[in-house]
Image: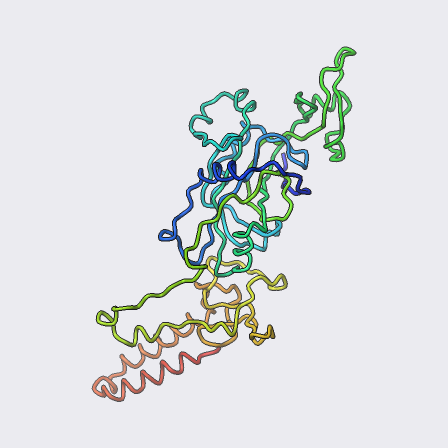
Length: 367
């Protein structure tokens, strides 16, 4: 059967979370301490999905959540389910009960289906935001301005009315149109032999789930999907470069070569109008836009390493069109030619002068 993509989005209607529950559940995902963190990443934990019915009238059985658990880690984190607006990824997961106590996944896998489906549970995730690329978003997440909303595919579904689950075939026999999304969320009843055997809200029970990612959103369909905890920063997100007492072990030029980008200009990393090409690793020197302190755009698609327009179509560090790689290739080619020129082998001074000139040319290389 064709796969269906499912986003959980709806108006937020959750007021029951307590600070005690927040702290208890947050303790399940172990976020790195200040000394363990990578300084360009923002870490947080959140409730990803819960068993039962959400505000979109999708129903998640415990057995289906356990079966799909291997599809969670390493999936993308995006903004409002825009799959081109990737800001991070998921790095860990844990199951908990509704009180926040950790559940052992191996034990859940060994539990028979009926018992799993009767158990209330959350899946909690640990996630990373690329903080240096999206500093404002990282700050808003740390200040509880966003929530999370899981994304998944499903291959099939059943119909749930009250406490009764009907297969699609059974639902069609009793006259329910399973292709009509308008039935979900409405009141329904099931009659058998003239007797009412079930009544309640009509929901869709997802089968064959594959989690495909997570969005940060303002209004999640799963009310408990709040961001529980962000890894603390001891010095207000300041990255400290300590070079004290290290000059005796280095050439002074090494220390002087540290290049700190001026705060007078900044790269705007989140413009929607920038095309996203395929990439295996965006170059750290690539800036989509450079603005002055008044917000005026002074450069677009810019290579900060060589102060020139980027020549790579994919912004990829492995692209042969990248200026850095062009410079290396050009320098190597000139150097190889020089070192293999017999007339120059005994002209050390001239060779060094020529090499310096070549390196200067390579640095200014454009095409």
